[in-house]
Structures are given as structure tokens and as C-alpha cells.
Amino acid sequence: QVQLVESGGGLVQAGGSLRLSCSASGRTFSTHAMGWFRQTPGKEREFVAAISWSGGSGSRTFSADSVKGRFTISGDNAKNTVYLQMNSLKPEDTAVYFCAAGQRSFVRVGVRADYDYWGQGTQVTVSS
Image (cartoon, rainbow, N blue to C red):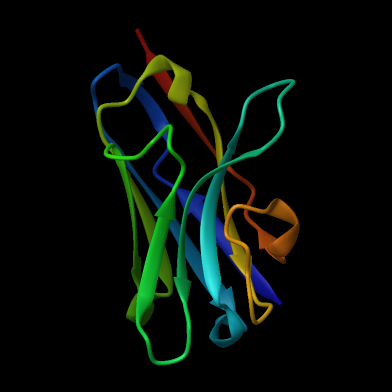
């Protein structure tokens, strides 16, 4: 089992920044990818960004087109924590942001079903 706890959400004005954190505990050594998704009422949970680890080849990061150039995902293995730095925030970024961990050998980072564990979510509200 893996437990995920998100933090860092809040209210910010358009153009501002926030940094979300996702702290993982439990059987984290089997995690091959961690991702951030977001959801607004009445809509499906959508992919935001992910970081994956494959053997000894280091890490790779991925992000949705809607956040490219504004959001950056990073990981701190020593702290079992993944961050999402969000800059130039827009009102349309308002959502509940969820952290997820995938432990299968190949995680399709943009696919919700490929993630095994989810956090409870943290609210991000961007005012215009």
C-alpha cells in the first residue's frame, strides 16, 4: 500500500504561483511513476503532469499541453515527495488537484487507470 498526501493548494490571483506537494509513504519503492491530475465539478479528471522512473535511466517528465511552459513537476526521492510548481496561473486552472502513484512496470502517464493509488486532493482556486 502507498499513502499519498497533497498539500499546498489555496486561493491565488490570476498570474500568481503555487507549489503543490505530494508526500508518499508505505511501499513507495515499487513506484514507477507519479502524476498530477485535476478535476472540476461535472468533468472528468484530467492529466496535468507526471514524472516517471525507469531502471537506472533517471527520470522523465511529461505535461499536458494546457500547462506546458507554466507548470513544472519534480521529485525528491530522498523525501518521497513530488512537487508541482504552477506559475502564471489562470482562472481555468481552478480545480481539485490529485496526486497519483503507479506501480506497474509500464505506466501510461496520461491514463488514470494506470495509477494504483490516489491522494485525497487539494483545492486550487485562481481568481480573475
